[in-house]
Image: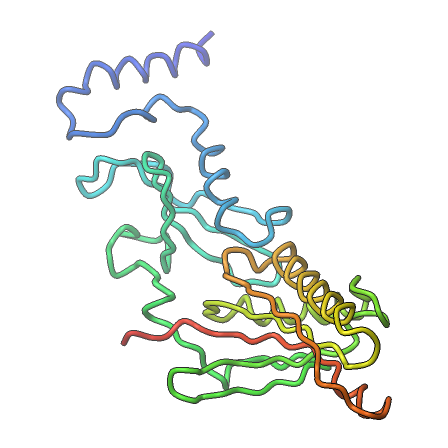
Length: 254
């Protein structure tokens, strides 16, 4: 019986003392399922929905005169560094921060990848079997990844080796401030042009879907299918078959 009365007493105290407290947005004060609310918020932030874990480092509270309840959360995902987020339980907003220690709500604790980070080529981890080139032309800086052996001949379903390679690409990209991707499927000039074009486009779409499903959510990804001009020999046409991912990054505003 004691366990039942105790929370009711706590709620009664909240009601009786409300007039003496700072102005609060109290629509969630009585919400005893705030951990579920936090889970629902985090699902929109993480890449691996099935395997992430979180710990509430600072429980919901009104801090620094704020009318909103905020909490600080530590998030763990496989193969990625832990991250910290402020969760606003009134506005359902999420903001990444450097730490949940101390005055975690201070402005200088906020992480803004778009403004504070830019791509550093020296930090890029090469992927086995992927040709990498970087263009530093002003206004057109991008990384280009050339891939092979992603698909069986004349098919658009990824091979097991292709899936493994793309998993490694995803792992590398998730650590960088990626702003957008363009996926190019290039078919050779043998056979019927329209069939080759359709195959190239379907392959590009297959790669895009795989990248999104396996962790690159929230990044604009465009696809391009094309067919090379006709060459005379089979040996020449083999070299026309290419698959490329063009990666662009957030630019530092510092």
